Length: 118
Length: 383
Ligand SMILES: [Zn+2]
Image (tube, rainbow over all chains, first blue to last red; front, side, top):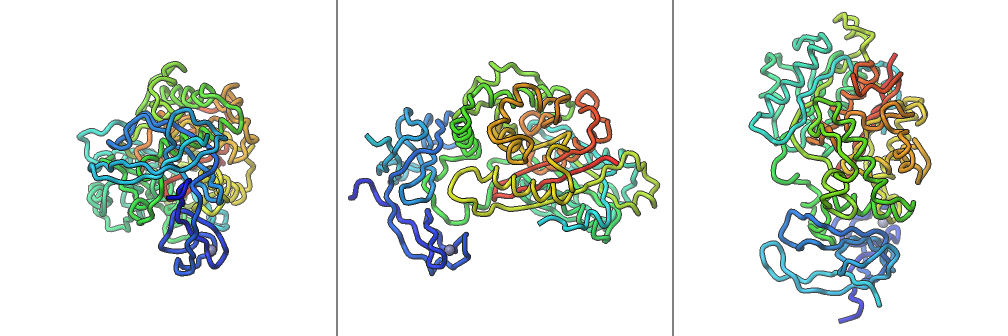
């Protein structure tokens, strides 16, 4: 297990655009089909661009309150993900962490969350 | 793309408007909601149903085949009826289609209707595309906009109170609108209570209820032939639809898409942002009004919060923003919303908006964005 974890994204063979998440269809920039994508490992680390703590949620999971961040990954793409702890602020450096959780039906899942890097 | 000169070659007018109040989900059927708005629009236009050549129904939640069972109760005249779905912009797209049909010369009088009743969830298609992202179900629309609020407030040094003032204004406007779902004046303290996500509170998020809105669109030939009141006809001078392009990595998609669409609409209408007297925007969440005021060029980036605070965007200010109460107070029943914006703009430009009247309103704009992401902008002008 690497630290921080690696996220599987892709680089487009047509235009070199790096994107996450994996996409089975094609490139939004140049229109190349997904068969021209090459897999690319992206480090789960980056900086927080925006943050919101959610107080009301219509599903049992995640339980409120939880915090969501917009994270600019070191490798380029921007993702939204749960950031653990409520002390995160815009500009913080965060790192990915794998956490055991449950989906709405109680089935075990492994989620990638982020945590403020120390 | 814009309608590329079609609207200047063959002018198109809104000649009638009608609403069913926006309200919480009730036992009223969608047929009753829709017919109420259409009958009101026909009366307002002084057009009889057999003179309507075609109908477009903006609806996202009703399911297939909603138009005929409703509109045939005005008389089954056999006209073309088409449902239009474009997420939150469904009603705006119904108006766009009606304008295009009249501008093309195919029809002289066309109905654009929006009607919906909320069901559990919105059933949005992007969730079925099989693309797994990290956030899963944790980022619903209000959190998407709470994140935009976080980014905006950090970038421009704006605080929670300043964003909440958008809702303060729109609830006040809504209190003057008998068709609004929320008709109460609120205090800043009330607006800042009940947090939902990030800085957004319950009263800074739009209610999704039920309702209907209708407009009758006509050509000059139609107006002459049916001897309609030309002085109350409001011209549609641009109708532009765009979808999201790649704007670079970031989260400001809704604002970038709005800037794109707005620019094309101003060009088609040959007007400047400073010419806009009344503006109905997609203020589903309070932060959006600030983002779109700047994206549409009504002020410089970072200026909108101060302009809200100084009353610039009040009724009676330099541009009345969301005089109907907007999505925040009038409500967002999905299908009707975009048509309801046109209804408000037309009433404002006719000088028939009663206590919500923006003085000397000549030019108005309606703007919706929807999941997808799509954006539809119309500009209307009196005279
Ligand atoms: Zn590409």
